[in-house]
Amino acid sequence: MSVSAFLLSAAQERAQQLLGEAESLTLSPRDWDAFVAALDNLDKPRPKRAAAVQRYRAWRSESGEP
Image 1 (tube, rainbow, N blue to C red):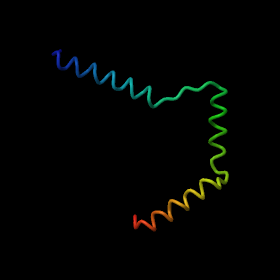
Image 2: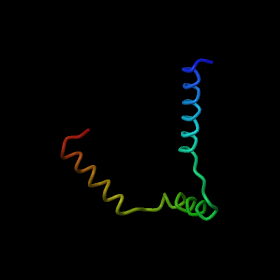
Image 3: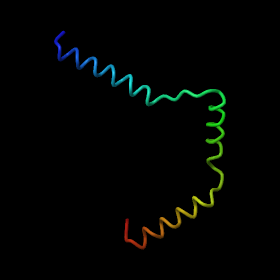
Image 4: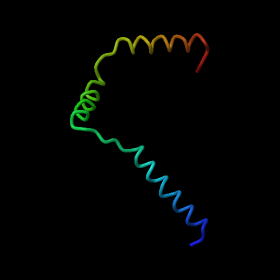
């Protein structure tokens, strides 16, 4: 194996390792419960968010943004 091939292989292995770490999430049971509860609450009305969306849409229409 050439030095270039070895370096390329090592770099690819390390990149896969880093991506695997960035794509996975490990939670304690308590944190998992909090995470699931937050997901379950996504569909509840959010008046402040709705008002912010309306302000943003009004701003875009006034500024001529598509």
